[in-house]
Image 1 (tube, rainbow, N blue to C red):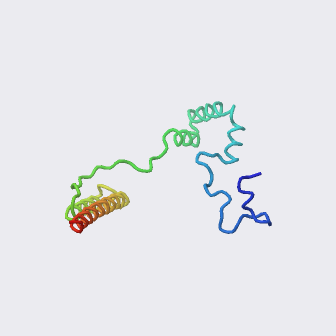
Image 2: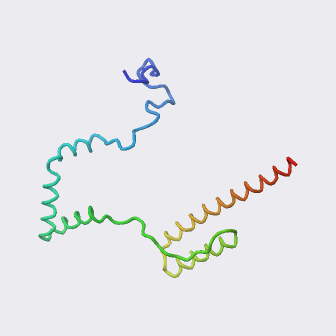
Amino acid sequence: MSENAEEMQVTGKFQKGRSGNPKGKAKGTKNRATIFAETLLKDEVESICRRLIQEALTGNIQAIKMVLDRIFPSRRDCPITIELPKIQNSSHVLQAIGSITAAVGNGEISPSEGEALSRIIDVHVKAIEAHDCEKRLSKLEERKIQ
């Protein structure tokens, strides 16, 4: 009997608003289709791969694409280089955003890369603000204690 069977209602359904599996599926758990495919192809994977490579070597474009997609998958992000000032105050933030805007305008980086950099700067600014706020609060508390 399952652990949560006692929490079930008389009708056999779980209580309203309560999940039967609050932690969800465990990480790394394979679904049934994946397990079935792995079992089915367990002894054949090597021969299938060799055949696919042979097809690619004979000039089969689809086979070439399949081999290359598996060996060299397309990268989602690639590193970019852009000079930004060290951000310690609001004027540095304006300089950094200006540098990003200029780089996008000059075609040095893509608009999506510029947007990603701007979000990183925004997170950095929020961290600075939180740190400054904490310092000011500590000073006020010290004054109040004295």
